[in-house]
Length: 184
Image 1: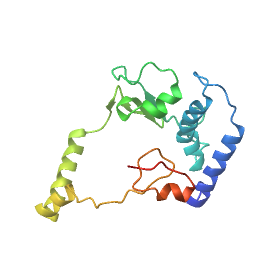
Image 2: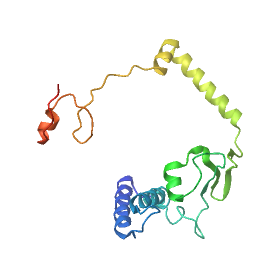
Image 3: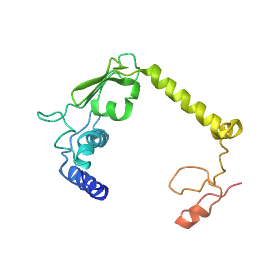
Image 4: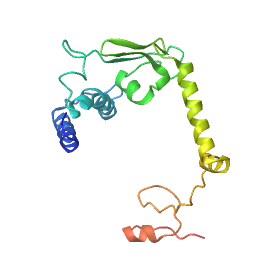
């Protein structure tokens, strides 16, 4: 597997090549950019991820000789899963973890009809409950409660001259050379 810095460089190179060689085609509403972005997202998550990790000869796309790693997204009970006007857009922007119908890893079905297979969920729940109880006992009840509801420090909202909003003062606009109307 390539070292991390080579992986990052390889990913950037893949993105540049992908953008350079992409064929632009009009989307369903004449807007090709949204369609291309959604397709890019899916490509980066599949083939691009495998390529970045140096595993593209083994995984990343359904081809003979590669490991069969597949995620099937289907949920007939979800109001956001129909109508499917643009499959890439649905995968990138609409699909949620509850919409994963089937998962196959290396040819082995791990999830089917929205249910994990070969997993003892009761055992997993018990392990999680024991971990929580251990932490609660180790930390003490006061620390546990404080950790569950931490104080959130105040933050200062900075003026952004590139948004349509009310500003704390006109200095942001003046710094950009923008004249603002007088406030009463």
